[in-house]
Image 1 (cartoon, rainbow, N blue to C red):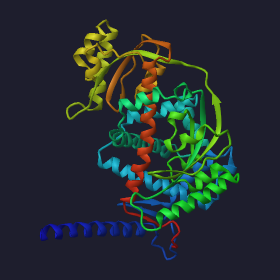
Image 2: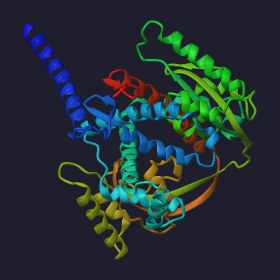
Image 3: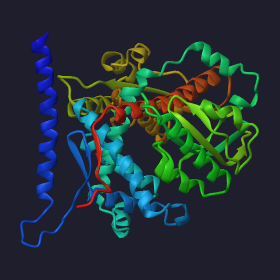
Image 4: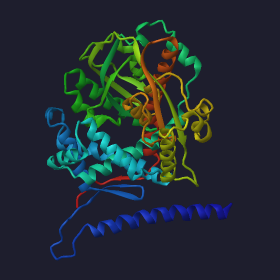
Length: 445
């Protein structure tokens, strides 16, 4: 037992020494060796065994400012904005470190496709998109790496949080049969913005009172008519803070439970009461609301072949195998037979790769994206989702009445999305609370 304690002590000492050595080394390289010492760059935060440099902070700030060019009054004072961006960078860096530890990677093929999709959504070719970024004084290479980082974070969160989200059949049935008739009919949906004042997972004495006081001050300013976007950027601890806290258009079932009870009495422009959850204190504002009359849903009938990567089959091999299968199908081989023989989706393989009629939003994002863009009777190029590599054929598409079965599927997805967001906030708070962070933004040099 004494030996164990000694080893544990040595490990802690080594970790501290390594952090001090890293900090000292990086401080040394930020200065020139000339007689007139000049600061080239400086460390603004130490995050575990990594650092955030002032140049990174300035670059990210310039991107945020450009996003608000058409609405400059939504941006808070520069020092407030810089502090909030630094906090976002710290949380981002912690997640990237964790993704690296878990071996999560984004291959060049997936990144290239993501960039092409971004360009397409902006109705441009990739080259046109690149030129627009350069004209806006944005570094295209840095922008591309930021997209890679966002893809890494998305994969990390889905792998980490998905296992925490449990949905029971009784929850789904309760939502479907709820007396409030407009709940699933979505007679109204709301454009909502949000501010979170977080509370540490294991708060120290006084931290809860401090958070309550801070939430009260922000709430008073919001109710007094202060710019809500500014308040969110300046004060919110939520991950959407730098977007002005905007959650976008949502129906009631997609809103946090802490807010749902208030929504029926609120109109566009109203600010909610302060709500409390495990993550902290919440303030919401209804930016707008609109009626929805359409009760029809778009459904797709598709079949696919899935190849998973493993120690023997890497991404290139999985893609090559699917290209061969696609070529065989286009040459006359039967899709169903090849799916039964090759697909690793055991649920659909027995049916020749065929899946039931479903709303495409129930698929994972990449699969949904491909299916939505694919014309009936066409087979996609091989693509990668979090399950592996696929080729998919859309057999048919239809507009279908929102039946009880479709309502249950939609209810399950809405519950999953709400719980995923709530669990993500709790997980990020826990990750930050358990990590070594040193904020040097306001230290003199």
